[in-house]
Image (cartoon, rainbow, N blue to C red):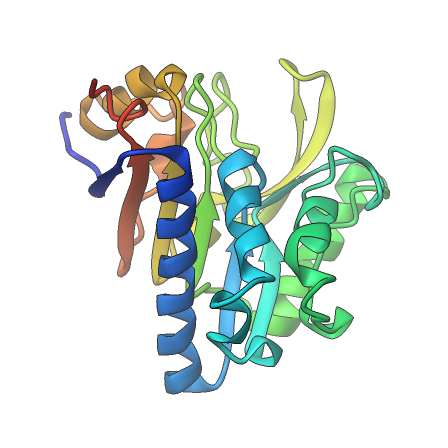
Length: 243
């Protein structure tokens, strides 16, 4: 099966990608808040999202939306305490959640410090409590690794494992670390899923994920295909394989 997955936007530099991601975030937030009074987003870790998050605490983004109407979730997390340098929550908190004074009640972090299996069950309960038994985000932000992984869905295992559980604990052999991740059933229920990627080391895998044969066990990022939403790629020229 050959396909071309999602809409690709190519920018000159990593900084341009970070800005494009910030602009897209604000655009979806405005639309959701105008429509329902609430913007529900799933954050990603990684270098590009970190640059984007830092923009949120500054003009013009800090005043572009009503941040009290934003509910923040996480697509995955390393099983580390929230003050650990590898924590996605810590990165997002230091970049914009703290500086903007976003209420703890709006920030739904994965408890990486707890037993992984119990933390997965607990986060599923958070999703159900906040979003219902068929949780759907207004926006899911994701990155992609050179190996084709996304969130904490890694090559070599069917990304649909425990799909209906919504959240699962994953032992990442390549990193020798437990992680928590949302499953494709959650990601693919979103109104929009956006991949942001930069650097020449991503060019080959992005090409294969978007246009190559469909093999999500080898390339878990291929499993992302929102049923009723958009799939968007924001990349720099290097990641697009362009000089």
